[in-house]
Image 1 (cartoon, rainbow, N blue to C red):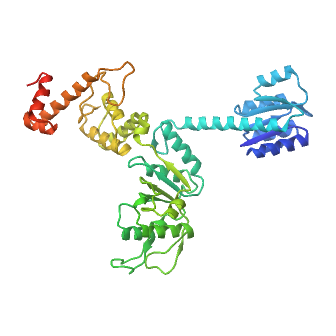
Image 2 (cartoon, one colour; image 1 turned 45 degrees about the vertical axis):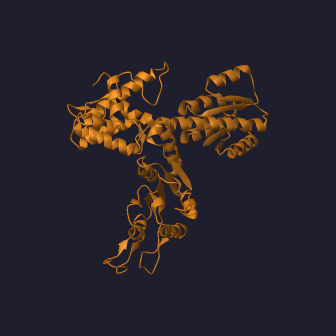
Image 3 (cartoon, rainbow, N blue to C red; image 1 turned 180 degrees about the vertical axis):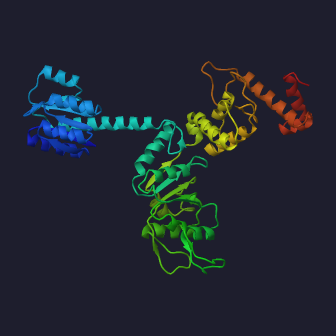
Length: 443
């Protein structure tokens, strides 16, 4: 953060500069209005201290100037010539506060601290407002996702390891790519590998490479993915599935920044940022080395499940409809609200990936440009869901009877009308099934 000090007294400027530095402000000094004009023209200031009476004019004019060019600048007017009229005039011109010389250093320190917190709060609000429907290809504007976006913004510029936790389908690779795109390595390679997709021997050769003749079938030399990601980012998905023997080799690379291909006689210097992801708790020493965990987890990001960000489901549905309808050359004009209601109340254990698969299926089956729920019974109008109770309550006996009636109808349909088979599907004796069926007016 940047601050301007406009005061003709060198001692005042020196004290304020010291106090501002304590709170992390970079201060620029001006002894007169002319110097202040030049600084204001070339910089944005988060905070400004201004004397009201200066050798070449009134500080009030400079106050108006800086507020006109940077309305968000917090201006603290400080002067030895105090009057009610002057204070009112300064506040009308946009001053944040008004203090009188000689001032108490501890009081000024508190004022600076409060202003800093106000500035940071406004910056956070502006940042959140920029995340309209998503961020770096990640769709969602829920509070849970905005926290993830802000963490990405903070972590990305610093060249450290990142460990991402999240259930399957929560978007771990998208988050890793967003970190890469926002980093200083964004123009360099972004390489990914799923550690669960290959046996230990193949995973080692993929990561570290091999030389010609190092093992049966190695007819040529091959660069490893770590080397291919040089100067860029390597994303290790499902790193919890990496064998312990290979974890030791990866740890050695993280410490030395050197790789030796299988069968090679020399090491290669590699500069690469490692981002890893897992859906397991890696702190369990039985499945993952503790020293490697601490190497990888300089920063940790935990991704919310879809159940924790239900308000993003309509946005995700719209996003997938646009992408997949184009892929399958289907025109979708309307999305049935019943489908959105169902998805919002359904627990999708596969998270966003499962949601995408479901939308893909419904697009393929869609007719007349309407996306409908085809393979589930749509909920009855005004019927309360199983996961919530309306504020005015509801008749649980009637509700359970409706559920039972629906299940009995489905069982009979699956059993082609054979009641003994339908009873088996529901885990009931034939007598119990027939009795319950008669309660619903069926024989």
